[in-house]
Length: 293
Image (tube, rainbow, N blue to C red; front, side, top):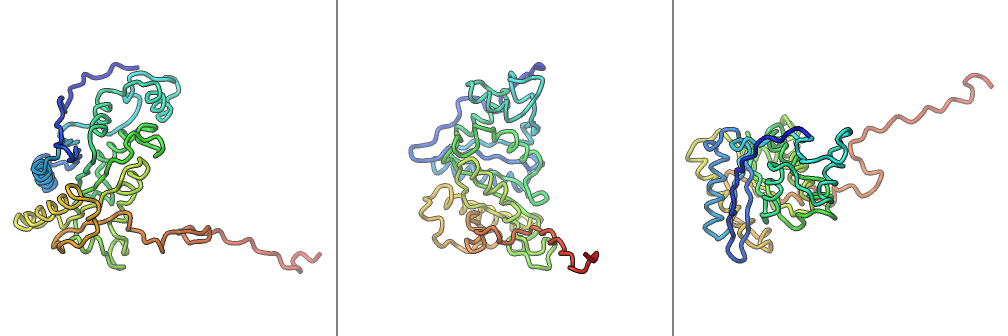
């Protein structure tokens, strides 16, 4: 194994404690304009709201902290098979042997162990999360630690996404057939990371918050922040029993239950249901006269 670089923790102990009955919240943000972006303003508002209600908050700014988004041999302090590297094999070996991962990765796992809910804050890039944020998912959702569901150490934790988008929210969440995305809602495009990923980790997908459009002015963004605070109060601070009770109609944003993005009537239930697969053409049956038997 090559020598590990000197590790300096970005999250020195002790980590904060929540008041009784409240949550420990990990906010992960990946906007490149560190400390100055609208995404950072949303994080500041969420942190203040949560802490005022007695929750404990840690903010993990991936860009500011220089998080390494690539996985590989450097994720491990020792290898089971150094001459034939297989990521999942090494992950399982480390977990089942009671070993530790490389310090920077281990700290990220410890942060998720600590929290009750992860809030992912990011601008939507090409219908998904920014590369460094995707790298956090690739690196930190360790096999036999985070998934599959039956062995996940994070069973019952919550996972929420807060995303800013380019167009206004109505156009993003209800695009017309003639739009560039041909009517595919942005929340559907995000379903792999906003729904499928937490389900694979036995985590609960909290309704996502979507807000646009990103180029509005300061006054409009203040209104957006206020709407986000209401989302946080309802879906993080509040009771799950109230998730689907009526709420004020937001001007700039939308709260989206990812479990309801595909109605039950549209979920494939039979092998013959159309899934977009282009079937091969059936083989042509030769006519009886062909070739003249």
